[in-house]
Image (cartoon, rainbow, N blue to C red; front, side, top):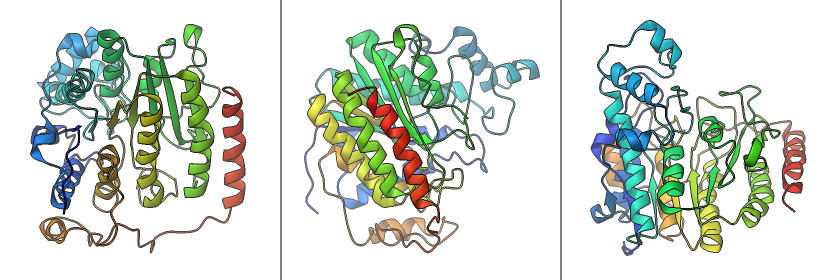
Amino acid sequence: MKKKQQSTGYVYSNDLLQYRFSNSHPFNQMRLKLTTELLIDLGYLQNTQFISPRIATDDEIGLIHSYDYIQTIRHASHGILSDNEAKKYGLDGDDTQQFRMMHKHSARIVGGALNLVDQIMTNKITNGCHLGGGLHHSLPGRANGFCIYNDVAIAIKYLMHHYNQRVLCIDTDAHHGDGTQWSFYTNNQVLIYSIHETGKFLFPGSGHYTERGNEEGFGYTVNVPLEPYTEDDSFLEVFKATIEPVIASFKPDIIVSVHGVDIHYLDPLTHMNCTLDVLYQIPYMIKSLADTYTDGKIIMFGGGGYNIWEVVPRAWSHVFLALIGETKPKGQLPEKWINKWQQYAPNPLPQTWTDDRKAYQAIPRRSEISEINMKRAMQVRSWFI
């Protein structure tokens, strides 16, 4: 297969797999390795495109997180956190658990994001992705939703602080990016756009369309909540109707995007009903926006996605393929990849790039769901045109 020379960076190291709560936890970084090897076996990703992550400094993490919280994570890393502290800082539940060396492994995810930022802003590369990142739930002083340090928010603040950038964050994860939103809720130099399943029935319960920012930041937070069981056509219709006027109005210098793939109908943690078809289109659409509005400058993060065998590798591959300007692949997945990983997979691995849809169930309320979604989209759209 012909290999293209592209100025695209790909943050990767096997060390990123050490961000791991437990063997049974749904957040499993093995999805990153599966995606990386799939891209390599396709012939599109080269080792020369890897950007090695470093350990972010406390000052860099402190761009978003409080000093006491960073020290708490250090204590948890060594198993010396009291029960009261664990409860105070969000480390006492099943979702976001303490694990050994959690500060180092979390800071490495942040460092990967910052290395990517520096490469783009010094014109060594045009764009890049950090699929092992996208920890958008972490709050300035509290762990939250599988997330310890919010690499997305830190990267945005780093872009603002070190490079004076005006940043648009586009978050298409099924879960609302609450940590990123609250980190910039009063800021008018960054606009946070999140399209997600409504918080009426899904963690974290926030992201209502009336959450629009506060003080100087009013109007710089845009939430587009979707009804449970939203399908492909409605998702794309709402996304197209709202994102274009937002970006045209805000005029960013760079785009940061979060590509959680948990809107898929096979994801075990959400109630959305989208397919790989829409997940393949999203990164290409956002890349096109970057080409039009930011001279191609864009950083794409990973995020959610908890069906790590059937959904994530195929969907995340398209993030990188969109960045290098490669067309969507069709037909069979690489035999080498299937043969290597089938022995570890709990179910038969997919053989092609398309969903077999055996478990897909059409939703009887499709028209009603689409109508509610579009009504909300028109309310959001009216603020910018």
